Length: 224
Image (cartoon, rainbow, N blue to C red; front, side, top):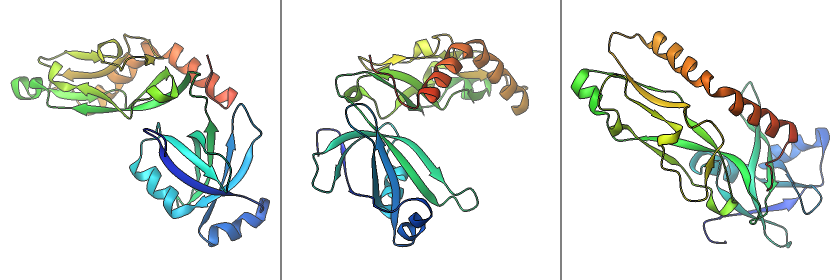
């Protein structure tokens, strides 16, 4: 395993279409590796191991993936498919990355500490975002970004994207003014708080939505 990468082993897949149901019954998950530098590869990995990883490892984690006896490849989880009726893990896509090219990804936000406004003014804290779209080199992807709630001292205090302490080399892909968290007066209902959070986020959303649509259309992160 390379530094700060999680090792994952797989084998090349020979069954496709309806036949993959036999793989699933035997505890194997069909998957694909795609991205620049090499052709796409159909693989299969142990379902139980992959389910454990998806539960305990952030989606922004880099994997050192070894297929049979091939050289290890650095990849990111790009897409996860589950059976709608049972949430059974059905398929996974891995994106092959270059450690020298920047890419776009989502990093989870962790709301840390306690807001003084809760104790001082019985404030209601709304959390307008759960993750942040960023761009950076693969080796610089943080596992999480902290949101320090102690900055919310009084009613109407807010934390915006520009207030976050991003690691060196990591750039947010949304406007600095986009709302992350805010302290509201206790008389504001949860419904009103949700509406206000949505309205605040919408003000800076066009650029974010456009970037997300562009990434989805391309089917892969952008390289610089």
